[in-house]
Amino acid sequence: MLRRLKMKLVEYHQLYKPLLVPTYMILIALSLFSLSTRIFSSKNDNYNTFNNTKQPFIEFSKYNKLKNNYDEVVQGLDTALNNNQNVTLVIIKTGCPDCKKWEGELTHYYYQSSHIKDNRTKYLMVDIAGLSNEQLKWFVKNLPMQTVYPSIKTPTVMNIKPMKTHWVLQDAFIEKGTSHEMKEIFKNSIS
Image 1 (cartoon, rainbow, N blue to C red):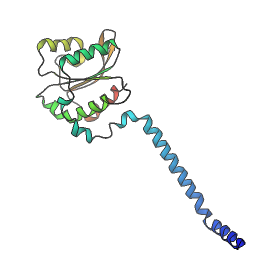
Image 2: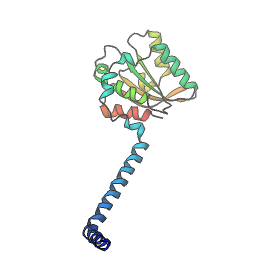
Image 3: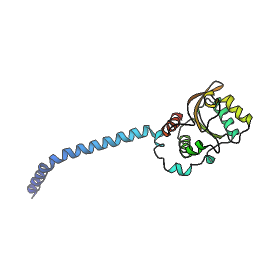
């Protein structure tokens, strides 16, 4: 009985051995692919937040939920300058047709970027519609000239970095551009 069982096992092994080797190779290849995908995705977690574009468009599609008032922006810029911290500043204007057009996408990228773990960049958004002439002059005086001269265009998304006592422009999306360009500005803001 034992001998018959042994013979059946040998016969079974001889029949199915050619199938086992390719099966093992396929399993090994799949596990290596899975491992490399996990390693790649963990290295790029900061950018994976931009891949899910549906949910935040619904929840954060309005500027009102994210914008800061003038005093918060001035204080935030001063604090960031003193702490040598990069800033992404978004300038919008109520009633601006381009601002309305970009509202969903801009607020989405703004929200996603500002909520990335271990991101040292400060994110500020200001509506210039209700600002006085003195307040607008403060922006013209303190922000990089390329972004505010000859006039402040909206929407503007700028990445600025501190340089001793003033701000230096790294890159900007000013009024016109593509969705990809805006996404790149926010990706470049992550530090």
